[in-house]
Image (cartoon, rainbow over the protein chains, first blue to last red):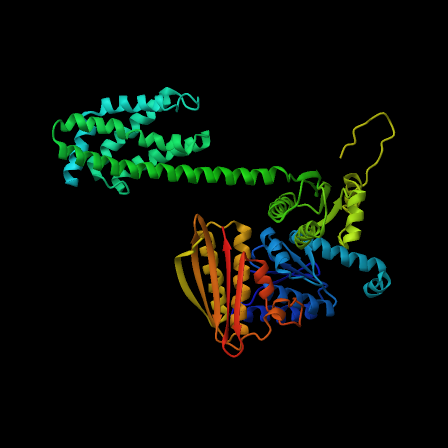
Length: 134
Length: 292
Length: 136
């Protein structure tokens, strides 16, 4: 079975999600990502979805699930490249992508992740910062 | 008997073409197509001549079957004429008359061709009526479809014209909304804004509602949907132009706009500049232009 | 105004791959009747939701896709049917919200919001039929 390739770049893991993902593939992706985050110590996960013409609740739940697992492993998830028609449909559908930051494209998404990592470095300890910010 | 009718018709149209054309354009002129000034005589002549010629050919090739391939080029010519009539603002009657007014000249030509043969004349008239009616209806159908298309396009243009997206700065867009926000308009508004966000790689979109008369729960919902969609694409929104009365109405209605809102577009712009890491600096000397 | 069916076919829904096929078919039909991009996306997404429901909760079933005509207007009508356990409380099912882990996530409310027309019939123990339509 094909597995979706995961790129490692600048402290983050980048995944390009293609159209028409089926259940087994989605599950495999979650597993692979989780394993890679642990193995590489990545602090960010970038899910690039510009090729997705449809995002239904199944894909939505997968994205949210990946974000939740990544958060537990201290990595931030960014979804990049959502198409306008998809955004409009998702809003109408009422699906909320909780725990996920969004970016217009991969470049911005990586910038978002790098910025967050840089902030944490400045403060010395990411966890404390979150707590004090409330 | 229909066969005779077709043959007689073919003969009449072929042999008496010039006379038929003359009578037809005369009838068209009289019926007022020219007087309304929408079309010039020369153009009308050209159209009539082309149609009559193609009709003659079609009759020879395919008899009375106006839906067949032999009539394809005639149908296309009539469709073109019909479409241009629709765009030029002709009435439906005028357009239909273009074809129907061909009947009488043809009937008269048939009369000349058949001389005393009453049954041949009857056959020819029947045949002519049958095929010209079908062609006339075809012309009407195209006319109506074209009109609907024009109306639809105009509606779309109105919606789009009233929702221009303005690029205030690199990565900062403004969407000045004017008029009421209903579901249909919101759809167009949203699509325009989101596409602009992609095209301009915007980070911030300022939605200015100075020109929106009332903001009730429904309008607020539409605004929030737009903001939510923009956020999903990675762009932040600021709402500006909330007038005092609007603010009060919203509070009374319990409407919550969970998005940063500013009183004026200028304020929103200032926030957007700051957020995207820019600063506006006043220069010391008499130099007025700030270079970026 | 009477509605006539000008094209119809039925697709089985018994696997994840069938759901993919459902999306592809609905896209093709949506393009055929000339729906704009956003409307296309909406009906394909709604179809995907309902197809998944049919598969996950209905034990499998099928989708009947019809191109319909009412006067000058063209539309796309989709009917999802299964012989599954059915839904006892339809109103409650329609108000379910999406959450990251819990909730039935039935997608019915979503499919309704994404469509011009929505109709549901369900009998516990016998099955469920959901029909949606989008008009051009």
